[in-house]
Image 1 (tube, rainbow, N blue to C red):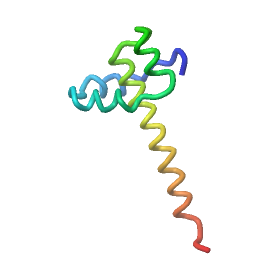
Image 2 (image 1 turned 60 degrees about the horizontal axis):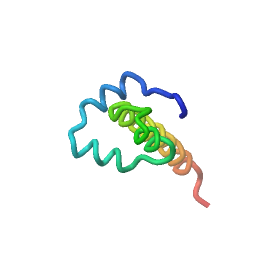
Image 3 (image 1 turned 135 degrees about the vertical axis):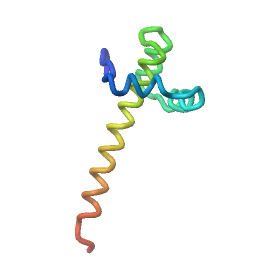
Image 4 (image 1 turned 120 degrees about the vertical axis):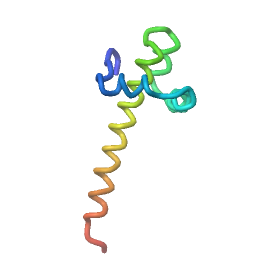
Length: 75
């Protein structure tokens, strides 16, 4: 995620967040993202958009795993 930028879709979603939603999203950041934000290598809106995109990817992965688990026959 070194020089990755969020898609336009997530840029727009980040702009629509209210102050409370933005703070909650910022508090969930981990890894290199908060460091990049602190060092001013990334704007707050860009960081929010990247976090939204990351969480969407993680949610989709979780949904796929759950679908596989539910599709397995019970032993």
